Image 1 (cartoon, rainbow, N blue to C red):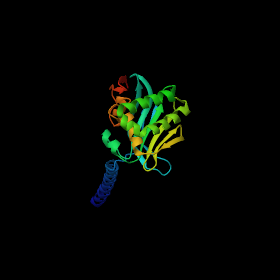
Image 2 (image 1 turned 60 degrees about the vertical axis):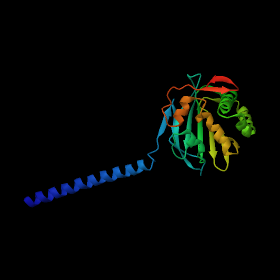
Image 3 (image 1 turned 135 degrees about the horizontal axis):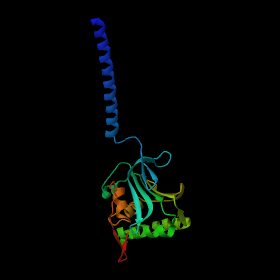
Image 4 (image 1 turned 120 degrees about the vertical axis):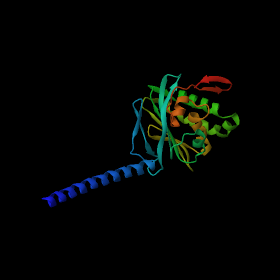
Amino acid sequence: MRRVVAVGAFVGLAIILRRAAALIAGAATMAVVLVAGWPPAMALEIEGVKVADKITLGKNGPQLVLNGAGVRHRMAFIKVYVGALYLTGKKADAEEVLKDPSAKRVLMHVLIDELTAKELTASLNNALAANHIPAELALIESRIQELNRMMASIGVIKKGGVVLIDYLPGIGTRVSVNGEEKITIKGEDFFQALLRIWIGKKPVDGRLRDAMLGGSGGFRLFWLTVNGERKKA
């Protein structure tokens, strides 16, 4: 009888040890995943828009991770679009992002009923002027005009429309609207200039800048100075 009890106790102990080992192995695997910085893919939802946690630029392009996302506001309260910034690795400092030569993406998902090309280009051009001195703008002026002409040809982007601005090292800035590639503009300096629209010292929206850099995107008002005239972002 004692032998049977002893054998039963041994079997029970073996089962407990196996279960404990399985739990430890599972915890170790999860720890490796978290340390590696690649948690299970998740989608962030902002204003009903799902923003992917990871994306791939093109079919065989590099994989990028979501650095941060938020809402572009007009006149502080009108929600214009959800903006997101994707990088090869998360960064919280704007200068580090600007100096990074790797692939990047800026995503804009339109929230208002209609966003006209005129409104969008005016907003982008104002932010470009606010974040660069005239000599800097002169170096990219022809390329800015290329972008403006392309946007003008679109006319209007309806609610739910998506604009992607991708930087591909060695190729340039590729702009796609609603899944259709529209233009590719050469030069890393051009994409850096565009990126300052959202994360420069005088961004188009202070809350969106903070959100793109991984912050909360809480209320913050920026003023843009364009040709000596002070304007709300």
